[in-house]
Length: 593
Image (cartoon, rainbow, N blue to C red; front, side, top):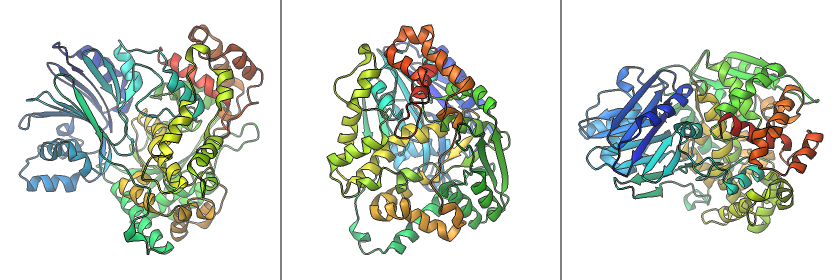
């Protein structure tokens, strides 16, 4: 796990190593263990390293293979790298390290861009060929690892975070009105390739982009899960599905133990993370380090779920760490959390993960986390109403449950200069849900959330906040074999038992029932859902200062209305509408935009 950056020139000039160096400095938290740089005429790479596999200097990056004429920078972890290495050795390749980075290099030489189909893991990498000048960029199937791009005449820059590209300078930092619409409508989700800034885009998940020396490029999507029933599984009983998914999850959890250092678990006390702990215990893991976080109650809302995480920790004898955060600590941590966001993320979970990651990183460097289970196994409340619905009806029901604002509210909020025609957010959902290879409306919504919402909200949140403290977070529920199997699973099995039915059935074999038979919990951060005190003061200043007034994103009368009653308007997901506006301005101002 690391931070990568670089520049490619197409106009005959040398790559700007100074700009690459500025990006590297911005990525230091993602890679606290080492720094590397490489340049060869028109191409320059920079890298910050978090040492997890092959802790020696041989695993450092940028990694140059002079024999093959290849150089790479890589962020992520390849869980099957040992098996791939053995296969490549059988083809005659010689290795100078024990790293997964070198496996990608050799694999690219052997399989070309199809190397991505051989990789089990999370990754973003860039490889350049010495002899042709070709550069290849790739991102993992579920978008767990980020890759941001800034294109300009004669030049392409890339980095693991958007702020790093801004720090490189000469980037168009004007606001993208369509992205703004997505942010304000879709709970801060901005689907790839857009970002909130016009001058920065992101490589979509499951995508390979090939750039030739003259700047021409092509890209293709190399993977997608099909949300359709398979003929070979037509005779499966409920128990057959449970057994198959349990085995796939066991494999996913086992894969994510690959490391040259210990691996812990972020234990929220919910079904998903508890299942990971239970399965690891059954794999023979003893003395497993587990971590839970809780906050002070505010406005009558509880701020921790320790009663559930304690049950799991006691049952499996983990080395459990309770982390309790006072409200004044939360306010003080907001600045760091916002600075760590590659893009503005309105969910209060981001601050929770930032604080959790800070404490966890003091004792361990790699953890497993339960993100993705709700999107893959239908754990959210908006899925059941879609059962049996037609596609257009499903789009309307999905938007009613998830979208923060409708067209009328958007017209009241957004200033004329940033207004867009129609409803691009609703249209995006409509097109995605009507695409082929999703058998039912529930299938279509699960695909939408797994391919888009999950990538640009929960997964991005975990990556940004954990890597801001040099902590690697692995997400077994996003193992692509497991996701493919879950996509083929009949929706009614996932919707059963109040959602995640098939996962709950597996859980009853593994973990204490009181963790399963409980109301669905969320990562509670009451001080952000109910604004008061220092947090409210931060939001008021961000929306009222000169920078905000000059930018003029929002109609002043609407902002003043929200400021007059800061907790009066909540989104359908119980988010605070004032916080959403304030967070965007806080993020823009924190990054000098």
